[in-house]
Image (cartoon, rainbow, N blue to C red):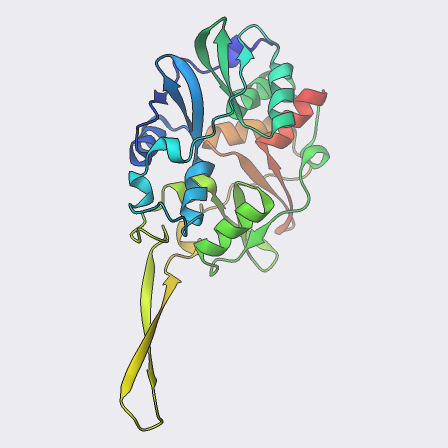
Length: 283
């Protein structure tokens, strides 16, 4: 299996001066989760859904004077790009992604940009070539970061940043009911130019004396958006006994990057593209 057999080409790319609003529109239009940043025809960076979601979480940065969507790509893009040769084996690309904790690699032919290979492309390679090699329970991640539908997006963002993940499963008790991903958060419409999250101002009034006139006020901002409002539902799941090739096919069919693993209506783990890529690299 060669990289050029599974890479995507042509590549969706923008200059460093492009706005995140433009990048988000490209992501939606092309149903992709990353956009390459180029200088001429040379790749110099990449911006992902996670980068945009992280910007929303980082509401206190002093340079932020405009809403996040109006910021330029150069503010948030990752600049340290790894590339892979078009004639390399798919397993080599898998190992590189795992080693460096990334989900895509620009593909080069000599000095020319030939395409991009992503975790989704590797998932397709697994589905087409490795049926019957692994069950979900053999590769899944049993520890799952969860929240409940009433948790705010601020809380979900903090969980993603703390655990360096791109998804949080939403549960009611032990039962999973939805999922919030970095993609969901990157597409949330925001209204507050400072916090990057829709908020409301509650004005608290204090009196100098018990029967006196109200003179001093302070303001507190609270998030208006909850996980339940943006989570993806109904939830698409898998079982511990299912073949990983079938799970991969379901991810590809629905355009998702993970499947909660459910047995007897209880959450047992999660299987992600990365888990399946790890099985590919080792198998």
